[in-house]
Amino acid sequence: MTARTTVERITDHPDAQDITLQGVLEAIADPVRRSIVRQIANAPGDMACGTFDISVTRSTGTHHFRVLRQSGIIRQYYAGTSKMNMLRRDDLDRAFPGLLDAIVEASDREAVRAAGARR
Image (cartoon, rainbow, N blue to C red; front, side, top):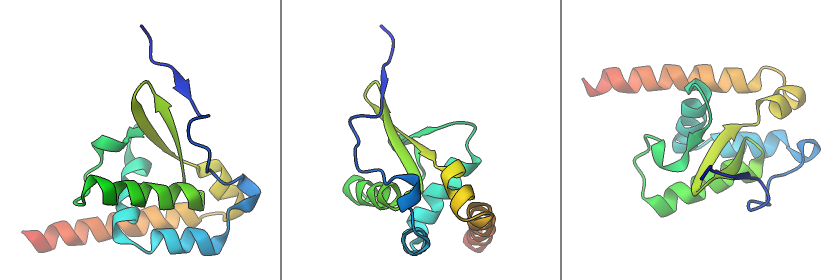
């Protein structure tokens, strides 16, 4: 039995032309959401919801993924029973050239500083 990939089960992704700078900036203002974006950007492929290193409850994590999805930063789809996450890099780069790269680079620097502070 092979896993089926469907997009139809998640219907609240905005169309590319409806992604706004305000929505993207509000979504990434939260450090947990920036961490999610950073982890997807640095992963070799799409990531399942349960594989993220975030220190929030499952229901709070669900909220953060929904905010990222509804702002147009990520696209979610099911692969079998796993909810997968991918960045909408092409849509974001077309609408706001360089913004996603700047967000990921800044988030990487934040993560390094935070790791150094915990030592």
